[in-house]
Length: 426
Image 1 (cartoon, rainbow, N blue to C red):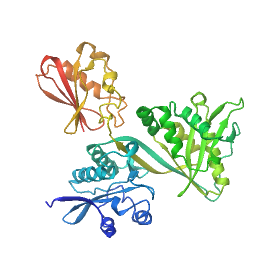
Image 2: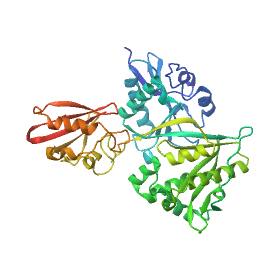
Image 3: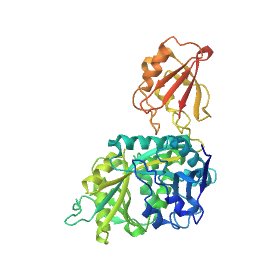
């Protein structure tokens, strides 16, 4: 088989990048028209990478960012084709390209993110699910970790279609200054369901996470609205945005003490009405799939899902691969009272390992656990397998496969004196 060559295209090789036609069931992304329209602004030849065998493009990925950016913010949807070696090819492509596009991984805030656009109904089709699994495997093996799946929404001003009326329970006024804006956003970050904000809080604290949100809000500030209940208490914030590509709902947040009252929908409606009154005929928005209250509010306000988006981020320093938490203690330690960590985790040949001691007498009290992609430590299967192996007579240094529901597996190895080494197979 010819050697694999991974490189960015030259300025005169746009036709080479667009020659890729081995599309998966997910479709070709970015679409040709979108890529060509954004070329030399959001897309650039030097940010467009190909994997070649014998001069033929067998995989590709396009990074993107603002026209004035030195490095890209996003690694866009990757195309790895349908060849038998597609995962291995994709890993080589992403490892090489991602390192070059981040200065060997030094991108601010762990960027660029890997954002894979998906059809709205991808969960319902076996071929699409398999294609998504391939891309998640590539990302994981290339050193990225799954963060969240999001839905992209749109409100179209179709003929005869109108926004629901403002409920009128809340009073709105423009935000005073950036200090007031930061104070309210800081409050809404507390207990948020947004995966990006939760990641930033875990990494740098509430203050830094709030500042990051404020810095990314578009103008004009005159559109930013604070909401108050009849008692004069601030309820939350609504930020309608005007961006180069159109109007959007940039931020909606409810303060913790006012959650559960349906205020998110009222904040969303206020932002939407302000944009429509300003002439918007279409409004874009996005939210996490797991943020059920916000997704329901969008649906009640007439927004429709137009895309899904799978987001991975760099597994940087202090962030272990799945199976270990980003904090000082992995979830398996808090979820299994019978398992005691004996040393810090280490990464060897793409596997996270840490030695532990098993206390068989307390295995019966272990809750169920499943190593989900975002490592939340909830679910089923994993603990049952651990209990099974611990209670059997296991030959010294034997290795048993412990399946879990995510499709990967645990392996437990018992050296002398009751020590065990757990490995997350990536």
